[in-house]
Image 1: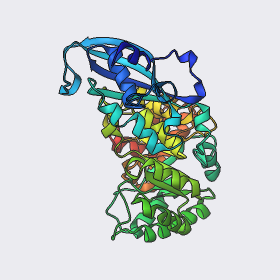
Image 2: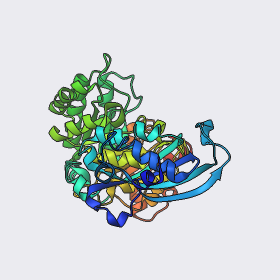
Image 3: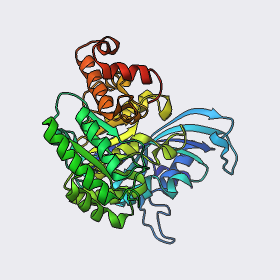
Length: 434
């Protein structure tokens, strides 16, 4: 690539139509001239060969990705993770912002991902270490997507809960129970104060716990809990499956009484979720299998906040994500960024309810609330409710009691003196994972 060729993939951001480009923030390690490396990077993920032999055409102006910011952070002795790249020259760690013309792929999530996370990104010459850190969508692009149908406001309306977090519970044990046992556990959780009783993300349509039977029994238990408590409840059924079954499973589960549906976003595929979101009659809730596999390495892969934004774009009303605490291997800063990506303005799209989870119980509720700085979140214990020594009814009650203490500015240890369920939770779980 000559000097003139290279300059065709650089631009002053102020000269570009902001509605015509996505902004992509990458970390990359490259060998040799960083400007040449990032020019190749833009070429590979947009025009590649940008003119025909013997022709004067130049596709870079209209279709080429453009470097609008480049910062070389450091010179490294070797590439991270033992990766290699042919050639000679120093290895540079860079931060680069690229303006990607979205007309290249249109409002199509598979084509978007093929451009910004595909071959051109992870097989660019001289740059074996790449991580897509963040993605920014112009309103003109977002206008082509529906996003969440219900969002935070709609989910709160479904439950009639507006002044506190939404309390979820993952029915445990997660994949080994007959539907009758699951329904009884769900009922007890709802009676104790849960808003949402949910299938585990690994519980699918199995021969020992079919979705048809499970959703019928839990749907009936939900209605019983509503009648006994006078409060709306949600049964969150997992319909994760092959794409060609999603619509049928949706219809069956909803007809049986499931009033929200869980979908494992990446295993099923975001385009499939978008299809389901267009026709769903209930809120869609995302779970996070595969996200850690793509995002955990600091300098390689796809940042979790990118996938949070894409899940919102696809139409998830609620996004369950790795939460606070050592078990999830995610920094508090990253958890907060993901929660913010659910709630912050994003064109006309409704906000999604963030649900950071992982080993939570009544004693971790205050930490989650304080770290997020908002009541617009879901709290999702598993064993913290269904492993409570007083049963799921006691476990759910301990969560509600913890919130009452927080709202009243009372230390939970003091509040527990006169609340047996909270006291039992503290004795059982203490600072241990629950």
